[in-house]
Length: 402
Image 1 (cartoon, rainbow, N blue to C red):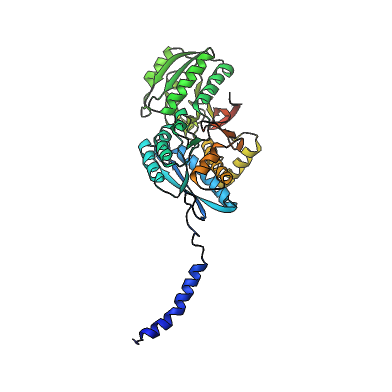
Image 2 (image 1 turned 30 degrees about the vertical axis):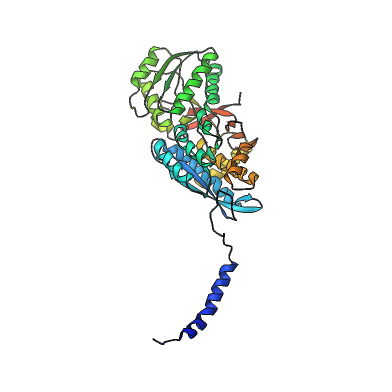
């Protein structure tokens, strides 16, 4: 090996060191960095957290909502990103699976709350999981947007908690009104899950509204989501001679309830809320044309709407994914797009400014309807009633806010 003096080594290395330093000096020191939620410094990426039930008992909810968010992000980034103070910034979503468990949702919330790069969070679909996680985001001052948690208490956690869906007091009114005016029902039974905030809240509102409208609740039975035999409760309802049954539960148990009701000879109309809205609902009821044929439920959107924005969305999503978007897909999409709109209007990725812009959302034309965020950070918007026909959910009517 040839030996060099120290002076010779320095003479050989210095030009390379100078070149390296000059190249480093030409580079934007912030290029490629993630967004700092404090709003300090120039950044290129807006980091958004998402927690969803990608696995577990209500996995279709999380999978569908995630698909809508991903579709929105692809659309935003294909257009160059969100304009923030004259600069286009790409969106990056970090998604965590809470496995349909409330304690896991809280664990994820603690993780996101400790990450200074997270500008805002989208989630959860289920009200119980949103209520568990929301306090962590409120404490950290991170805006949280639920695509579809309808229990009224979710946004009562604090001023950083929002939703882009209607709430159960409206949904309960919609189905009570439909049962009374459209189906002419006089005596209705309720079958609820007391362990789910969603089920309890919706059942209570329906009961109050239906009674106000002159109807009678002839039975109010309970079940556990992990139950597989509902015959005892259904027998009680049959004895009460109800002319309709309201089941404010989730799709994974509703199918079984419907099958067992039919086995017991119960043929009255079955009604529910947006917790029914899953492609697996009919499958659980024995398949198309079986136990849930002709049943009704309220939800947030119909792919059959004649609205041009809806049809454009359905066409684009179907072309990319091979199937039409379900309601939760549309709700996830709207949650991401309303967040993008708020960031653009805020002209900042600072959490407080984004929160303020979200609170000022007015008449935003979304896929699921025109949305205004009210003083309680809830979405003032319409609902639709759908009827199950084969494997399809057919549009029946739209009900506007009271």
